[in-house]
Image (cartoon, rainbow over all chains, first blue to last red):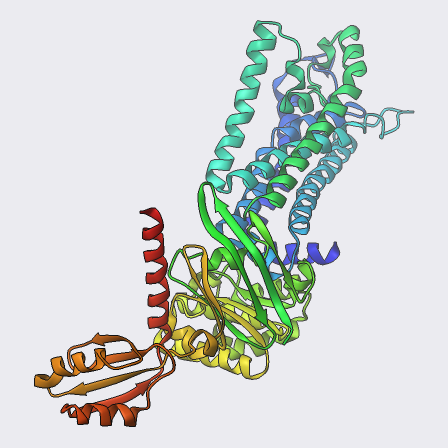
Length: 267
Length: 309
């Protein structure tokens, strides 16, 4: 497997677009949370010196806040994944890699690992950002473990992996970068609208299990935590394992579709 | 002679179109095997199947007597259709990727770059290469690790006359080293000059396959010419000659084909002279692959029309 990754590394290490998109992926996560932190501190009214939104950037809520903020940046790693995937089809190097001696399984396997590694890198940056913001932005309350609430970091990984896997799948099936990115964005928008209309307006059940929505639910917005009732919090807590299980099932489905498409079809 | 590649009843459909129909042949070890056919005859499809980038609708194939695997492909240098490289990387960086996939060391890269005369441009991005340079880089990639088997699909595509001659010389040199080469081409001349064996494809159908000398057996013919005033007389004379299968008239000469073997040129000269026709041109010729190919494809077309009627 290391040999395969070494070849993938050779493909990207001299590719400027890869480094630009990777730099943006890394930089935008702390930038986004720093912007939100400043906005909250400077633009929202305070009561007795405290923000009416509570302390979303203090431990333990900082894990949830930074994770949620970072999900807004999903488009950058998605574009990176689509670019790397469609490049192979544009240059027909997916064929050449097989001709030169990779199996189809090795090709698709190393691409899936690449998707996982980029999602993991993004998650590590989120974790470091949350630690940084939590330590330097606020005083850690006495007796509180900084790791309380850390579970949102693995939730973020699942959510980011879902986004990047959808991006990878679209790149693999559509084979053209521009079209794949457009469809990816359109899908995200359409699903949001569908959920809004059918769940919000018609009160239809099951909308929360759509691919994007179910991962969204892993990390609820933390800025309005003060407004969330105990009942709603308990409901989210009880549904969490189902959301996670459904998200993982979707990931497995994405892998199966990608594998089947590449293993069975003409290249 | 053992078989390097064995193709058994390979069939390929693209929707309702049958691109290959029950193609069967064997590539002997150490041969230069030409897969010949016009554009669209199924050459690239066939090679795509044996390199696992296309899936056959039916049939099977084996490399080195074993079921196909990626380890076998690593031992074969293949140029299929067009040179496929990462446009944003240099020629050398692309070869490093190919060497990594093939499991070969990078130490062979300078040698193969030198063979295809790309050493000076090894650091230039692939996107800046001319068509001929791209083709030469693809040939260099095939030569990485000095494989014993090479598959070339239209290797002289995009090359200038010098490049074509150099590539043919590289192929001849590889053949002299005892390597097995599968060479797909629509250029009859190319196959005829380089190959020891040939398979002829037309519309996905294998017309014939075998040793070039066997495929062309008994295909020698004689070209004769006479004064313009005697040409009609000569043609009639030859048509009536025992053993003659066909007489093809041209402006200044006629080609005489025999049903079995070929007549001695001296005998033919004497026969014409005795009949009052003085030849001013007489030459024994080996029938070109082109004429054989044309005859085979014409026969096939006639058979199809007859079946349709």
